[in-house]
Amino acid sequence: MQWVAGLSCALLYTFLAIRSNCTTGIDLPGFLVGYWLIAAVLFLYWYYLFDHDLDIRYRDVIGWAIVFRLLGIYGSPILEDDFYRYLLDGCLFWSSASPYGISPESLFQANSLSSECRDALIWVNNPHLPTVYGPVLQYTFALAHLMSPANIVPLQVILAGVDIGIILLLCKLARAREVLLYAWNPLVLKEAIFTAHPDVIGIFFLLVAFFARSHHRTAIACLFVALACATKVFALLALPFFLYQQKMRYWILTATVMGVLYLPFIMQGQTDLPVLGKFMETWIFNATAFRLAAFIFPDLVARLVCLGAFVLWWCCYFFHYQKHAAPGAIPRMDWIFALFFLLSPVTNAWYIVWLLPFAVIRPSCWPWATSVAVSLTYVTGLHWEGSELGAYQIADWAFALEVVLILAAVCHDFRNHRLTFNAS
Image (cartoon, rainbow, N blue to C red; front, top):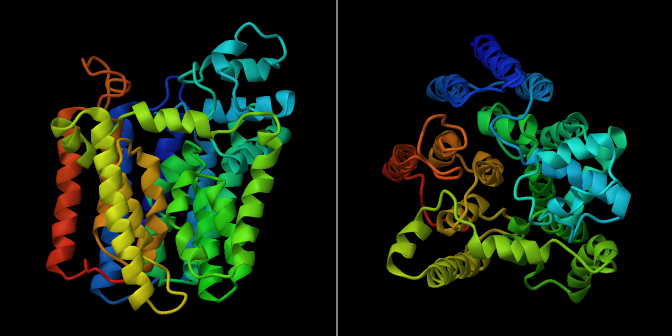
């Protein structure tokens, strides 16, 4: 059964890789068919193991995961162009010592970029805005550029290696059949490997930090959570779990690591924070609870209401965790990230990858249903030829189906008593 499932997924990933390498890339129907078939094979195989109380060997999970990631590296980005920004940031890091504060549109008349970098520049989206990616990602983009200028393959290789690191960590924290759900998952493969969204770097650092914390290695935990926070701001949601009631030296260590990472850019007068603030103030995409709030309140008030609701829930959970959780227990980061995205004005598909490793540790249905449902966020005017949708407007039927699938999974988990307000 394992070989049937593994080969089936490999063939489907090969289909996505070949189609993505076509001149025009893979179209929306082809992507959705391939994606949903992979998800169907994966979940049916997992259910077979679960229903028969069987498991799979860790080495088989990892072996197939490596095969799938090699296929992703062979493939090309699917329905995404964010990677051009990563390539340009790597170029600017080496040519200007910092990519911050430089809008791509200001470079169109410049002669300082190489021909490879200029090819990337042409395709960068939102060229009026400077980059929004944190310093750890900038160092990663610079490393990939050093390996091969303005070439996505080195970045894909780096991300694939980091992602395998996540899988190896999960093998120490969960049963193999649960790790399978992450290791073979089409959302992870599509977003992290094919399309090279670098969120797995921050996820890896955060997972290492929690692993070290569970083994009472506080200094190592603080080091890695600082790296995670300097990778992407989502990791800040976990930071208090590491610093609460800790000695001052651990606070200083965390601040020092983040300061050292930011310092070269601060000395040049720019960081990612101004553009990140503008992004948070204005952008709306795939919003759920925020969309409801925006019907009642003006935009700014709706954002504050959703932020306040999240902060209130987070505080309740945090102090419940401090009171009831076992020392070193990993908190319910799956729920924390999920509620944050639920209330956020922006929930891109690759954001959901942040909660999946924690869903491996505490199995339930809703995270994996979400990993399938978010593929529907690509049904936009940008990818649906002939539609009258705006470029970043999701079709109403696709958004409705996404919500229904996730709600159905949440209801299933409630009925099976898998959703409780557990501290850990």
